[in-house]
Amino acid sequence: MSRLSTREKVLIAILAGLLVAVYGFRYVYDPLITRRQELQLDVASLQLELAILLPWENRAPELAGMVAELEAAVAEAEAAAAGTPLPRFLEQLEEAARESRVMLRGTMLQNVTPEAGGQVSIEAFGAYDRLLAFLSGLEAEPRLLTFTGIRLVHQGQDLATMELSAVLHSGAIDPRAPAGGDPARNPMRPAR
Image (tube, rainbow, N blue to C red):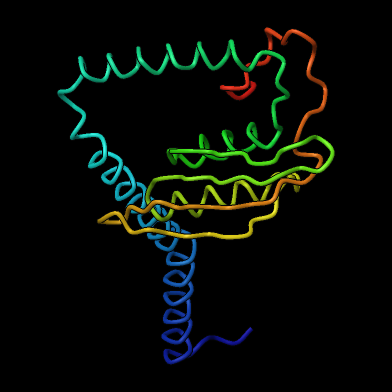
């Protein structure tokens, strides 16, 4: 076996150092940088949510009154809607909103029948990235509606209101409405 010259030893040492540096970057430093960027996005998103919630911080009595009024309106609407079929897409819509943490400001149904479907208008509010996650959540669900229009209205900072219009397909409405209403189904709240 031949002995290595000094030059060859130096080259092997340099190569070993380069390999350690490349593998260190690839398996240690790069994942840390990626995780740091993800955490920075999370912090920015949470700061936006905090900015939205701060104006409401000291208004607990006012909010309690608003909640009581809404609960009374919901109870009245529930009594009026007993036996009304619950559109499956409302459950899909609520799930997408909950997962993406956007606020649904309004949903309006027009000309809806179980056989033919109908039209719907949706208004959601949140950060741009959350609104994108909301749309992605709706895309991931079974095809119950087709969007015919999307409009974003800038609300300051990274916040926007998104107005959607869509056509409901016939499968979006559950035609099985029991006579007299089903106490297990509430058309004002999604199924859990």
